[in-house]
Image (tube, rainbow, N blue to C red; front, side, top):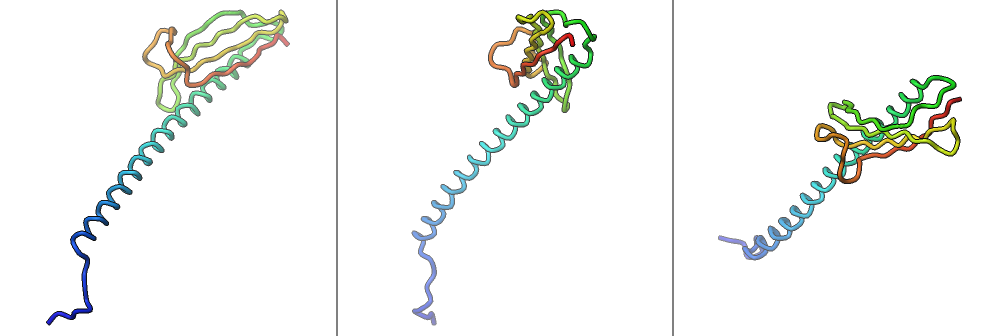
Length: 131
């Protein structure tokens, strides 16, 4: 015989708990997707910033002492972290004849000819002097 004090869950209670579990699971799944997208974006911006910093350092090391670098625009491709990056480096004159301003923009590579639409992943501004 069945003990009257022992009782299980009703079908309605099971359905309500499954509905709550489904809503919570969908919410968690959506948040995990957002976190993964943000992590990928942060990784790309970090690498792009490193590419820009490396480029500015290379320009400083290649500089001939006593000469200010020539003004102009250079578009080049660089590989870092198994990714292609497109750099647009613009060197411009300043009020001081011995000082040049360097603006570096980094975009995802492999798609362009230096005429980019939209914002770059990273920007860096620095200065090069003749001394």
